[in-house]
Image 1 (cartoon, rainbow, N blue to C red):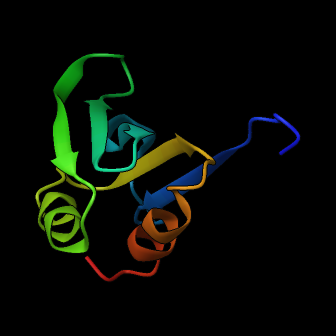
Image 2: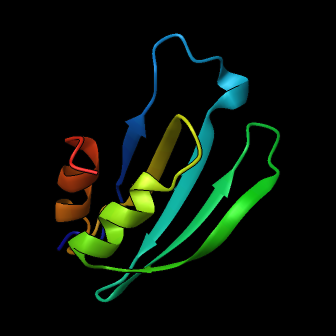
Length: 91
């Protein structure tokens, strides 16, 4: 491992969606859990919490996200499947 930190972005947005209604999601991924924080463009926290790092739990959480969203997470050993799962519209 080079120790280099990379981030990857996820999104489920509509091309015509104004920036003001997009929710921004930060994910802190661990082996068994994913901590999240959802904010508006103005920085107001909409929701934060923890979801199990399992496909079923992630699918349910993704389906409950408010409106169009854009997300980011640090690239680690545990993030590849999450990126693939969330960005392929499987939610």
